[in-house]
Length: 196
Image 1 (cartoon, rainbow, N blue to C red):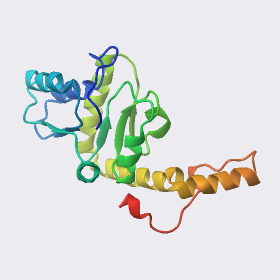
Image 2 (tube, rainbow, N blue to C red):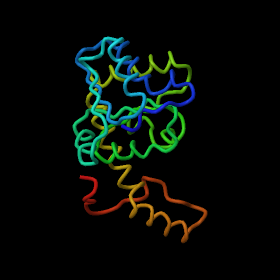
Image 3 (spheres, helix red, strand yellow):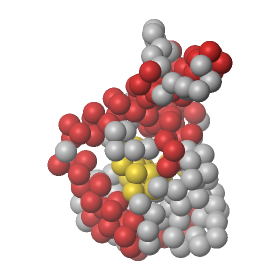
């Protein structure tokens, strides 16, 4: 989800996901790309060249309600970007109860771990593609693990990243500046309607 724009070393960019799908060679997989930009045609051409036309679906730019609907409909949210400074979209996926896959770089490295999905090492492109291929295969072979990651991710968002959780941590830090609460110490009661 996002803009399909050029970056330095664009041959290594988010196309890693497409190349991993081709390596997986599993016709049961489906990969939705939501977003638009000047590289969309390049991505569509690569999709066709890799023989992935029946697997990859380019949805283009979508209104927020459609983005949320697509996120809730997926089994796992994959962000194989090498230029992700924040990672807010990962938090949105986690809030929707979806396990996440990202690369160990930038903002995602602070958000994703083995409890909420998979954080793949940023080595060279071929190793990233191989790791991503294996991770995608494990979604089918370990569905309970991935479902648990989705539940843990949602809980982490509720207890760490919501405004009430941040306010509670801020209040705690003023009471005891030498000991900031971690995610397991912060618990918000009640329902958060925006997470549904």
